[in-house]
Image (cartoon, rainbow, N blue to C red; front, top):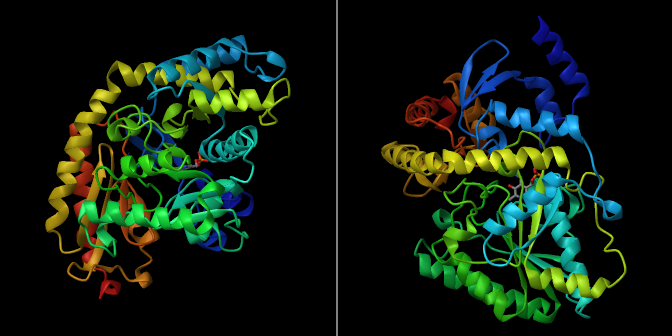
Length: 453
Ligand code: PMP
């Protein structure tokens, strides 16, 4: 009864993110009630394994009392402190220091914000200011990668390369440019890693020549593309692109909003790639989704250039909730949990997940299995040889999600017919095995679907 009236209130008043308003009104809300570890319970009392950690964010898993305690203690002591007027609080200062110590290279300066979208838009503003400070304000063009996702604030939504974020929004801006994705499974140059790297390098060189290399401010990558379908670049791709950017003095930004905080194994995925970006964005796993927080890391040369350029003037970028002490207290506790064993468990479970999903390759609908650590995808096709995507009539985004839900599993289902996985790092071996088994059931049920033919 309660859930019925909530569903009605939801339909009437709550606007859901990235949803068809009409589609959602028709389908209604699925109410989640509580959660513990990697399991969420819905309003009917059904347990589901959260194979997607909320929205690839609850890396530590649900129900950590010590995180609740850290937030409560901070709220009791000092629920808010601005960073304006040279003010500050202990938790954000400690968090910045802990993160700077662990970040690759000299990414020593941390600007805290509220999530990934405003972290990305903050990089755009800092980068513009950086080039202004260097006396090169004409370096105002930004390049990103096809299939990329960089948030829903206007700047990052324009860097995003997914049509739904542009159509009807007047995006991208004319200062935003793209090169093609490395999408190995569907790359026009084939699947050879070196051929893909060479093609991307050639495309970025051509783009720099076309728009003028002395006009380009920065190049954005996700170490593994998330919302574009969990696309893992060929080994060496990130490093090759990073080196090319350095050669042309183009700032290199790694958007680690999904890949940070143990998602792929190490603290940051850049460590896998052996690179140090000029700027790096994080969010999600930073607080494990318990409260909102994102961050921008800057290398010393970026920070120093901005500082010199501004001199005594204020750098006019900041939010009321920059460096929020409650979020910082949560992040500090989450970091302790990660390093107290969750990262290690995540690495073991990530290997188990990848091995389990690889066994689905024999299924008639599975065209590709890819991922790294606790970040993975299974791409469905109706014809393996021609890589024919699932028919749109099947409505894969909703149908696959529904099928998984019926099996007691939450996964991401992309419109192209891709199942996405990002389970909490606290998963047990049994939970990982159940994710794989239930996924096979989803595939079997989809194969029986009349619309598949
Ligand atoms: N960048 C990337 C790579 C992301 O995956 C996301 C969110 N999925 C964002 C930015 C935006 O983060 P948020 O939703 O926290 O604003």
